[in-house]
Image (cartoon, rainbow, N blue to C red; front, top):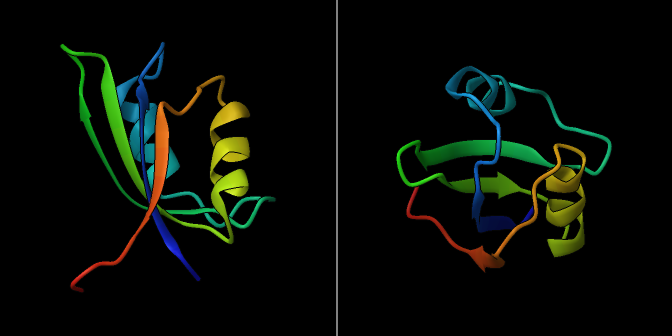
Length: 78
């Protein structure tokens, strides 16, 4: 399955909610979070997810009230 990196504002998400998303099973769109990087002070979050396509990544974030600024497919060294 492809891996994607996305960027978005955190909105009202708390650190605990991000950790819950990180540990959640695959959702109804086929998205699984591999890692979430964030900066509370700057209200920024970057997600590394496995997903079937970019649309699935966007839909995953929309269900949490977040809009991705950008989404790109990436390769990892691991």
